[in-house]
Length: 431
Image 1: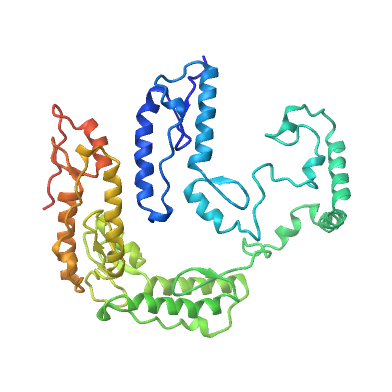
Image 2: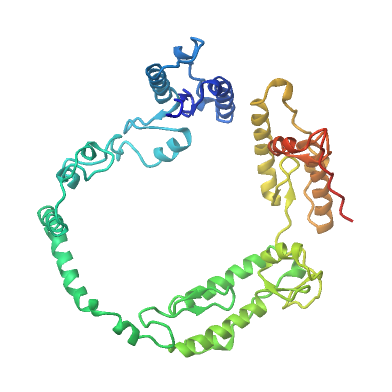
């Protein structure tokens, strides 16, 4: 039994069942209006008018009627929803149209929508059945021996591009002596490494590997990056650039054994001066990775900076972030002021899509946001605690049965499992 035919939405071009389409269209219209409100007034587009086929009441049922209905919906979607390029005539969705405009200009317009094949394209010489998805595919290609087909392709290359055919023939001739076997490659291997592959050298600061010519260029750049990262920390927590190991003062080795010894020395130095050791388990990590590790480390100790040797956890290995009271995400001191107006606009746009009786007002800003942002670690923690309290009580939605708070979308999934008859257990507070 064939699957039921679907009906198309004239706004988004997606297909739905006959019962679902009537529910979807008002939601799609509300989404259109909310997205247009985020644009400047001069760029906003009015809501496309509903096709007459939707105002008739009952949905079509027969296969022919559904086909006619979908054709009308698609015509409206093509002409009303999509945006048309004035240079090439092709149509796009909003986000794709912006990218297309930067490339398709009056001086260099794209080709109109179609096959994309020119009059002199090789595909015009292909036999029926070779082009999938076109009229050629409807015909059946007669079988012929592989050797005959290969010779036909070679002759086609010679007819259309003699230079290409000549270069291919010379490439085949030069490659022929190498096709005798793998004995030459095996003979060139030394200590398990093929001679054809150049050996790489490890940087003592970042642990990455580079070629012999690239390493002297990379190291000064890596040292400069180290200084910039450390400048973002408090003065008492900054680490000086580690001095280059003595191996870097000599010429780089060229034999495999010498390169291995060099890389072992660089890796040991990198692990000692660049990585930060966890006091709980003794493992070493990059500073940003140590932040995540210490949350799950079973050793129970605080991480230790190997170079500084302070024995205490450096909580400012990276710049401290400031929590947004609406979304709970953290941002830098300069980014937070840019983010909050955008987050407020997003809140209003999301609430505008809901029925009026379900909309929530924009939560008031905490008093701390209207003042100068703090700089000390203790003051930042106090600021984040206040913002998180507002986020937890105002932005999140509590479950009426277990009291836990969720984002609106997450609460819908939670409500399926947490009911009045079987409420979930409330999470115990951490000691």
